[in-house]
Length: 468
Image (cartoon, rainbow, N blue to C red; front, side, top):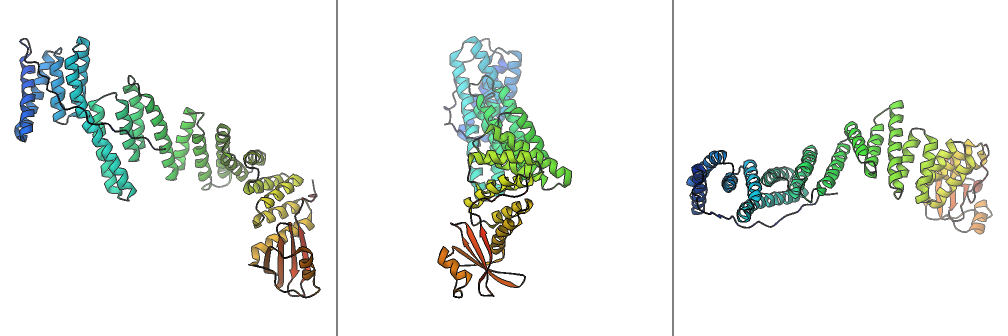
């Protein structure tokens, strides 16, 4: 999920709003205000050198003047203006805020409007520049220009940091500054901005958006750790998130992914422990989002990998409750049931797997293995013959000519043309297997000796497994 960007139109033009120099005004304040006016005039004329000198003098005079007369909030507003012209966003924002607060306490609506509009103009310029840099950076990144994109993200961060300092406590600015950090893969910085922002923007009615943005940033950070295969860090971070947001299914899923992938790097007891932890995390994720059968599937697979058969059985059944004909889940449940020596049930489930996907050779091998474990060797041979034909044979489009009166000819007369034909060898013997998938039967003939019947296979119904 991407963080949303929000742009704003440029604020109103800068407003002078001079009310004349009061008779009791501190001379440094009066002089500083005059320098601001002169500097802006020179700026408009293109006289950059005088403009810069006058703005610096304005700052010097207004800092001294407002220090001597801290109640001159109009002068404080001009100090913010001078700082803003010199790109000193932090001091400018502080001066603007102090001026607005002071003028508000005095009820001076006209001067409040002047200072607020001036601050809004500088903020809007920095903010919109930041948003544009983000947009440009994303376009460059999508085009593969990673270095250029990185530079644009850095510029966006600078501009939005300035906007944040010019207008402290503004939730929209804070959110988009965090966006710039996150898109630049600086998730720790984004998280810090959003955490601090919730306190800084507590008075902003939109502060709630910061909490939501923080969730997204944290999720993206955790995902980045996982993508980088930094499994230890991902496990720690997902663990923290799952404790903080105990009802967020995605955090537990991410924790499961981290444990599952780390397990592949481990051996023996450590490997089993990681798979068990993965299973627990996936199971919790599924508990929170029961509509997603993949979570139960993953939990079952993790439990099965660490030998927790009872837990695996429960999760496979949960997955199948959502998708009753999922052949992979049926196959895996059948395998678990066979390992638990629940042979009759295993056979029944594996038959369902074959019914769901009759051309998947592995399912015939699993069913044959289940019969073998149950000591039903004849039935095991029937199913394993189908597996070997599919595994080792070369598939043909149809059965060829067969000797008159042979078992193969009689079979064709009785059953019709087979849907699948496999030519293969076993111990030097040439064989041909015919599979009637809809009728759930197969016939293997000795292709080198008159097409006599070697083995008939029938999986039309579960046979008693044998051993209990």
